[in-house]
Length: 130
Picture 1 (tube, one colour):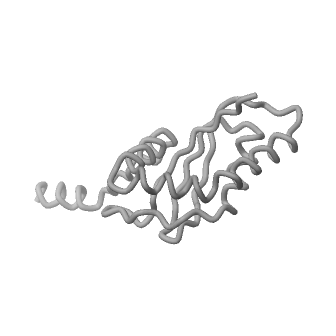
Picture 2 (cartoon, one colour):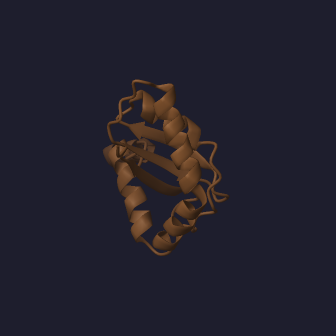
């Protein structure tokens, strides 16, 4: 009887969710970039969004003057059509938050398909050079 109770308790225990911390998301983005098709995707992505990202960053700096120009990292999950979602920036300075909000409106190319997820993780390190 105790064995049945123990089994029932184990079956009823919620499974641990995958680590969804910011650092884990950064790591998943880096692993995707290093994986099959990652380098090619990065090239296509930056060809498409380099100028819009530059304009976005300049606008965020201008609208937050005097701007904190500290480096920050952005993570996002891309839908199969390239639409960014679950966008987060750290450290969450005003410029980083502005950038993350504007990043949602960018049109990225469709990412490679991953075997274990519908979303394609990306991470972007942003450094503002004078």
